[in-house]
Length: 178
Image 1 (cartoon, rainbow, N blue to C red):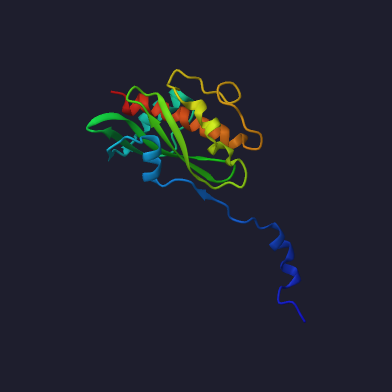
Image 2: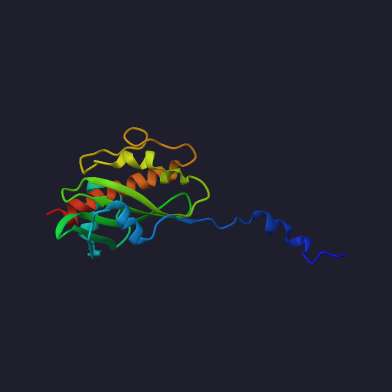
């Protein structure tokens, strides 16, 4: 019986990579994970101009890629509890979507990985790694391998999530600080 797969296509089939991705949390699930006692979230998407993006880069040494930053104010029974921010950073090849909870004073409450699309490095979703960000603020250096541990096989994911958090702490200083 003859194969219908042409032999000249074999090299092409051998070099294709399967698509990979895991959605851990939706926006609503991430909001409840980071602010379990919140009774309300109000959307407050931030539109950044060039000077604001430059100021964020000046503080963090990381360029604010997006002109619009997705953010919500979290409330518990009418009291402001902090900021819920969704961001994306590049892993090795694909975007990693994560959510950051900031206190009203600009300290990291927690971080959750929402979507991970890389084939390797998903260990950044482990709670033991993410807890290293708790309490960080603008003055925190957040240096990979010094303040934030590196994970072997996930170096780019670790570095870029760390830089993303550093950038969002600068965004707080420029756009959200009372």
